[in-house]
Image (cartoon, rainbow, N blue to C red; front, side):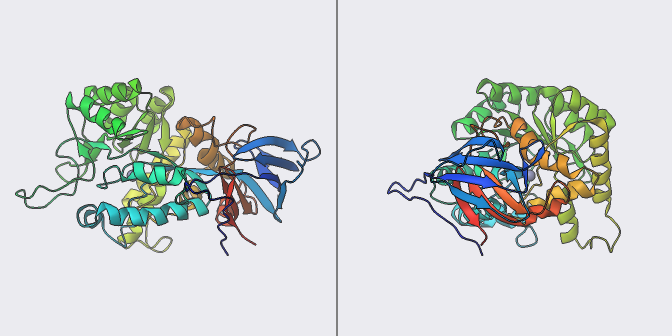
Amino acid sequence: MIVLSIILWPLCGCLYAQQKYYITADRVFDGETIHQGWAVVVENDKITAVGPKDKIKNPPGAIKINKPNSTLIPGLIEGHSHLFLCPYNITDWDTQVLKESDAYRTARATVHAKNTLLAGFTTARDLGTEGAGYSDVGLKRAISEGIIPGPRLLVAGRAIVATGSYGPKGYDNDMNIMLGAEPADGPDLIRVVRDQIGKGADVVKVYADYRWGLQNESRPTFSLEELTTVVETAKSSGRPTVAHAGTKEGMRRAILAGVETIEHGDDLDLEIGKLMKDHNVVYIPTLAAVEKIAEYRGWVKGKTPDPERVTLKKKSFQAALQSGVILGMGGDVGVFAHGENVLEMELMVEYGMNPLDVLKAATSVNSKAFHIDKLVGFIRGGLKADLVIVTGDPSVTISDLRKVQWVMKDGIVYRNEM
Ligand SMILES: [Zn+2]
């Protein structure tokens, strides 16, 4: 049973946490290490004390939380979501972009946001509305004001593509088809980056390559100079640039231009991995999206042979592990169901990563990569009280993350399984 426990709803519609909690669990994962016999104190919206139970006092009036066979972890951070998309096996991408109004997609997005939070993801970096304009900026505001439940958001707004590269495609050229992102080129990129920032983008997302080759294969889009222009313009305002990139040349240009994360990286090899490592670029692999799209096209995992794209993904993930590039976590959720975010973490383990490292990727690593480590991603005094309790030990069995018992964000309990 899911219980939405609301502490206080003042007339402004804002949510305030005004409570103390004394939380103990069999294991506490603090974002980096597992500890036995620890306690965590929450006061209002912050973590105020963390450490061995015998050293951490239970403050008077605190609500005691202790679930059997449990692990307490920091709220998970989804690194690559599209809250304005629903799975392509329900509605294909073209239809969502072209035939669904922003209001309809926002209504869906509110449900997606709730499902994400209740799955233990208290923060999400949403990388483009895919044709829903700046609806993500409004959604973020509604969540942060407590009007609807959802993860704290970092949003990209419309995202930027090179003219001619992006979809929807294949319609009569007499029609002015709206695109899934904003096209811009050359020096005009300066205006577009600034415009997106002005409209509320927390991160600038560019597509460094896309499927616009002669055989529909991925090919680089922007030149190195164009990408550098984007990065420098965004950086002036204190914002990072992140790149969709799958091809080696697309990745190479994006890395040299100074992007902070590479999304997808399907052709990543040891050479590109090393370049990323040398430039401190974080890799967000999006394994789940690739597997899910293959399944929508008829692949039956474990029964029919791996399609080429899945084989390639496994190879690039191995290369990422071997080259020592910093691995964050992001599944491109939206391509598959919101609330199923853990699937990406399960695949990271299946493809060869240690479960504890996968837990770090979705907490401390993502928080540092997204510049929010003074806020979330660790269980540490002074940080926001974003906490999740699961049954079992996800540092051994990653799927235990699906056994969510309790979710707190900003000191407010959103899920409490009785
Ligand atoms: Zn995406």
